[in-house]
Image (cartoon, rainbow, N blue to C red; front, side, top):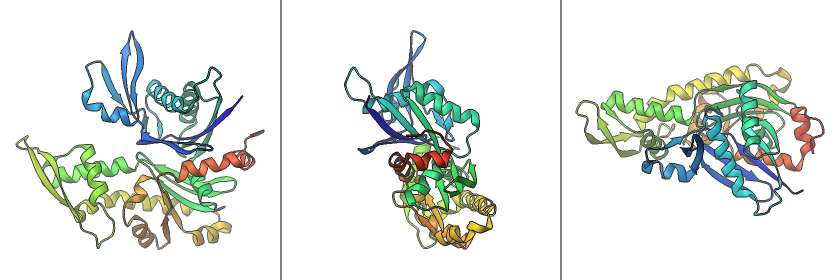
Length: 334
């Protein structure tokens, strides 16, 4: 029986799927539109199409985001979403291939949350599921034995010191791109007495946010006055937005210090020489590497392809299953 090997990132904001032999085949929002027909939840749209159709929902339809903070938030919706994603990659044949999945997950998931991920993917069509913490996948992408990884996703930031035998020390923070968006929303409310949408905050983040002091761009967005309850335009500058999000970045920096202080002295020199490696969507914020480097007095680098480094790194293990077996202490992994 033919086997299809996939890496699936269990992402709060986006799902990335990498197929062995084809590369990155899916990168879409972790979202679904569902409806209830005869008391049974049914999928209407998933991924990008679900977000695009969100404004056109009828009374019986609902937009759901099944993943929250890197964990399964809505089990049935998650099954439908991953089943649709996997189904896109299956050949049109009465003989369905075996689907083997490496799932990139948060290193902060509990044992119950890890089982939830595994069960959802099996119900979605996977015949075998291997759970791999995202910092280990990023370290494999880099090809470094001992590395300090900071993966800033939409819902979580994963911080870990990795080794060939696994994660030496690490933590998972409830800070990510979504928290940065909320900080921007709060800033606009506090300073301008206006309310903006979450999607507007995302636009602000991507267009003018920079942690480099020399940068100061501006943009105009639509908001709604709290006092008059009327639409209006707001002009924002990088300086103000930067100050609004720096407390979150400083919390990430504090967690990095805590994690790295737990590493054994015998690997400190290797990790320090390699520096701090940043990945995830918010690693694309201009100047975040230099800000952390100056604050921590430690070199920091944004990994090439920061959004996709984890799924690509995890896919390396398909060519070296023995290494993955030793890393995760799995027996008879082929």
